[in-house]
Length: 83
Image (cartoon, rainbow, N blue to C red; front, top):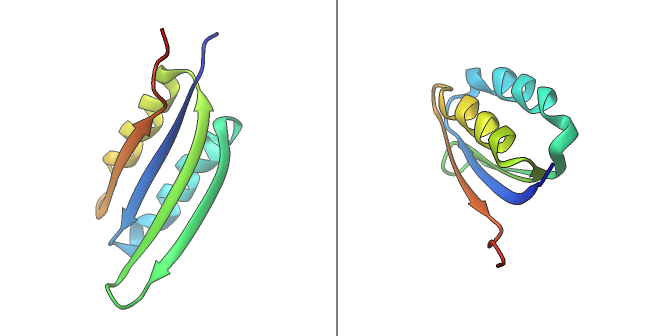
């Protein structure tokens, strides 16, 4: 199955949603290449970047679940399509 590489940028503003976010990421651990989290206490947020490699449908399902969490926003950047 064809896979895509993507980077998901996440900003966490509601600490009570972190456990749910971690549960979702654990469910998708098989497509996660790497993860970096940076607390930013001056702004009261945490910034997380996640590199993934998987089918676009799976990446979309992951980002859809993240997008439903209260106080968490995310954006996804996909690798360019060659052709």
